[in-house]
Image 1 (cartoon, helix red, strand yellow):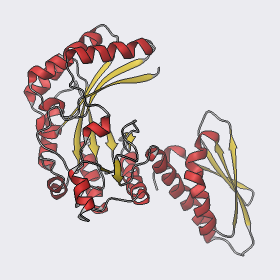
Image 2 (image 1 turned 180 degrees about the vertical axis):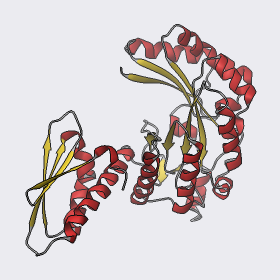
Image 3 (image 1 turned 45 degrees about the horizontal axis):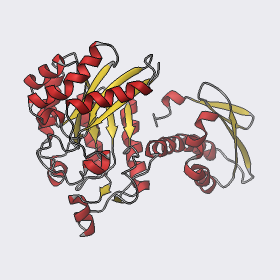
Image 4 (image 1 turned 30 degrees about the vertical axis):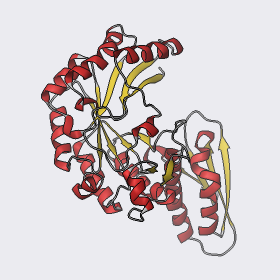
Amino acid sequence: MKRYIIPVFIPHYGCTNECVFCNQHKITGSQTTVNEYHVRKIILDWLERLNYAAFIELAFYGGSFTALSIEKQQELLSPAYEFLKQDKIQAIRISTRPDAIDDLILRNLILYGVSIIELGVQSLDNKVLKKSCRGHTKEDVELAVAVIRKYANFKLGLQVMPGLPKDTLLKGLLTIRNIIELKPDFVRIYPTVVLNHTKLAKLYCENQYTPLSLDESIKYCSILKILLDNHQIPIIRMGLQATENLNSANVLAGPYHPAFGELVQAEIFYLSITKFLEKINLYKKNFLKQEIIIFHSNRLTSKIRGNKNSNIKKWSRIFPYFNLKFSQEANEKNFIKIKCDNQIYTLNINLISNI
């Protein structure tokens, strides 16, 4: 069954402070004041276009939903709950801050059928959080997760932002280790980009902040994904989603790419296949060109070859004595097989991140 998300953007609603990276109006492309009427209209407009046989989820994005007054939360949730009771939508999701969670708030969310909560964690290093003006601490995150886990009603997602001010790869790894210990149901990874009209833009223009390059961010996030994959924690999004308002005119600097998640997956495939080729390279006894054929399902073509054949170009440099050939096959199941010296080796796609 297909899944659809009906997005309702509430930029800056409920936000008690201004994070250095944030310009929700540009990220969401929405500047409208949202009320009960708008929520109802958005749902009706989407339902006219969607297949009712699909699984449909309503998601409140942006802002800090539970930092709104209880009355405002109820106003926005009321029309969503009506459609939920009629089984015209099947789930309601909200995004919020870790320091805007308590038992009263959660019981109210349960009354209105909310089943998914996402917390904007961003980092679990207190120095990074302070420099980013998040207004909450690592301890606030741990407390919020503990309170949410008291209720079986909710799926929990955590959002992280590699590359914030004062962040390092080591701090990022420690953050992911702590995330794994918190056992969320899913994670989103948003590498930090510098948007116009933000505090981070000012720091960048004053040479007080250097964002990750695209290549650095891909390598950074590849490691994070491998760690999360090894603990069976799914990543449902990597990189900001492209919108009409999120483009080169609004992104001042940083690793923004509309297909960022695809680039990270290609990097992981590169690392996995490289490790296998290195084993073959160790046992080469001469400098004659050795033919190696990589067979794969056609759905993996872009991941194996890399963006603009970047993986193939790197393999050609690293293994100059290999005559690498690629053969794609139409197959419903993803697979990679490598032929060398008339022997065929199969790479386990399900374990390809375990490197």
